[in-house]
Image (cartoon, rainbow over all chains, first blue to last red; front, side, top):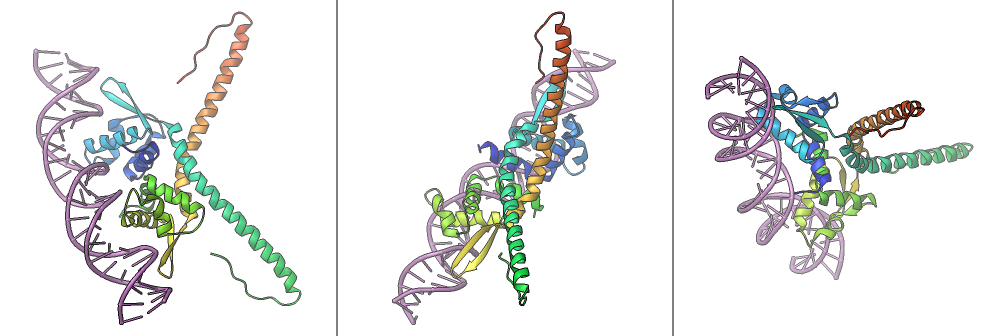
Length: 125
Length: 125
DNA sequence: AATCAAATTAACCGCATGGTTAATTAACCA
DNA sequence: TGGTTAATTAACCATGCGGTTAATTTGATT
């Protein structure tokens, strides 16, 4: 079996499963309620397999209620995956900042050299 | 082929690939440099396949330099995946807030009833 | 007890994925 | 031109995944 983070990302790598999570963000739902929007595209067992993937990844919990299985989002399970990605998002923002201040510095120099004559400049990739 | 977001999550669902991304966050690297830490566990072609997955997902770009292929992170490609997860992270924080204010309200009531007699209270799961 | 409803399990299928080794391409070096 | 290095492509294999239908479990209803 894979590590938890890999399991979570793998679970998220499917539109059906993401749609189920979206539905669950509106509140608790039974397996058939969750499956219903997909029953024209896939069978019930296929839907319960998707739910099992989400459950094993820890993103969803199931509780018994008579013959119904009620599913809930496990919101705190999203945290580590979110943290992982925010790390790269932060790097991106920092690079944007650097680009911003660079452009600004170029602009300042421009204004200075504009006192003589303006010329083209390159930007870095 | 799958949608972009699914491809990105799928690409992230592998420890080898995440390690490659981590290496790239330190800066540009060639295929062999990226593969080197894994060559005792897998062959070079396996490593280049992983890189191709990252490239197809848009997380990494390759540029030619003589016979070397230099790889770079495409940091802005992490944004949509990060946004997706932050949505759930936000829901979690909101639920924590609600729990907090609830506990606080219970506490206030407690203090009121404490004027008579104090007793244990339960917290919800 | 019989049946109905909700969901899972079993058994199977096709295809993608992650790996292998061997062969090939591409660019440099001498 | 011939050799070396860097990387990819080809051909193949095992395993896992997403789907199917049919059978089974589980609990409620009557």
